[in-house]
Length: 425
Image 1 (spheres, rainbow, N blue to C red):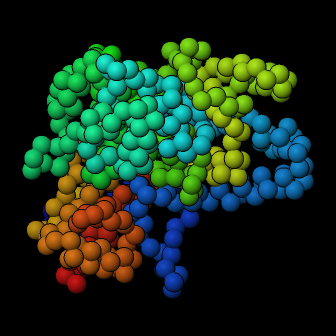
Image 2 (image 1 turned 90 degrees about the vertical axis):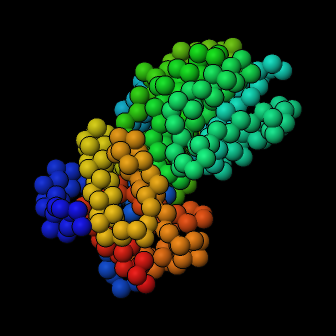
Image 3 (image 1 turned 135 degrees about the horizontal axis):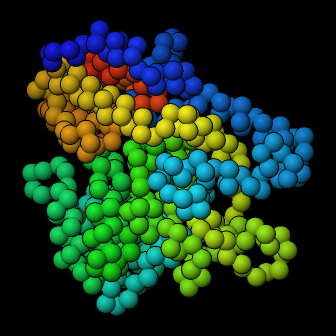
């Protein structure tokens, strides 16, 4: 057992945690007997903010009370609902308010932005992604390549770790971008790799892509709300994200997108336009002419789903209170504590495949259970029976995410203790 890593240490850290009171702002799941579960699955679905119910009910009440007039007279007028979210999302994206927009879902937003930023030619049409990318991204890219008439077998370039390694090396990403050179049209990369939790240096990837003349975009599904971002400063062309993981927006919550300000009023960029992307000052003249809205909002297609967006307002208020820098500081300490507890209690029964340096990973540890697929599955099932909510990735990996908004050091300790018991089971 690592010195200083035990239950008493966890409880002492929780007592000293200046962000600990935020946990009370979230509803914690319970088992059939009413006991609180140890929830370490925020990388898959974040917990419900307690204020989410009130925000949704207020919109339903305004709908019942005002009907169509809720668009202008509701407590939060529906016409400007997306605009309410942008100033709260911008600090988490490291962006200007006009560079972000809440809209659609991640995959829909990716299609919309690829319509503008993937402009292939016979000479330059290849797309670089990570091998083992989240399936939804790969599905989008394959369909885009086929839509443009290119064979994914040659046009989709997938870069994986070196043989025998789990993590991608920064120098290998840079080298592959350079090697593709003038044939490369787009680099689409995650901020955090979903399976391993590895965090990437987005500025370096952007610099390498722009050096060869390629567009660059990021999938931030596992990044936004997890670690600080600086999309404006790194000068990426675009980014997309969902809001139901670390942003706690609820299942199927409205997603988001970033478009750098240099593209704010570039009418030469082709786009799949919709009414809500037109200038709000002239939108309701119904002229039939598309007058472009400046910034990321110009990529909107339709008005936002208010009942889906309302919970996100409740969650983003907690981020505004805490600040992403303080949350990241706790996240690193909490994940380090979980790592030490796992290694101390589970020993040779597991292998942690996430980066060992906390600066190089998000709020996640991916744990390979030794002994093969069947044993790993049984361990994961036993962990669930012991009251720890985690998730599973084939063929043998359990993912644990200690989220600083609502997880405690005691949760990390208990997860390690129960995993050790599940290994014995």
